Image (cartoon, rainbow, N blue to C red; front, side, top):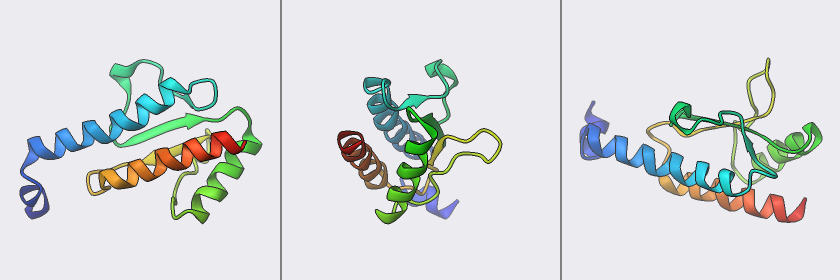
Length: 111
């Protein structure tokens, strides 16, 4: 609770979460030929766990491995469904999501 208050309260945390998720979903929606969001209805999308697929499972494995090399850890999707998952919970700073989107751009350009 102290952390939430230090961030400016619940409304401020909600706004920050909406901005972070919006940045990531916007990039994926603009590049849906490569990064396919697994939840197509924007109203049903999570602000905390953003799940997506790449064109092939081989690229997903490479994305996860190279992400880890770039200090972007935990991108592997759920063991029963595969794919990728970006967990952007409350304490994840906006800069972390910016770093992920930047990596996604570089990865797409290289692959």
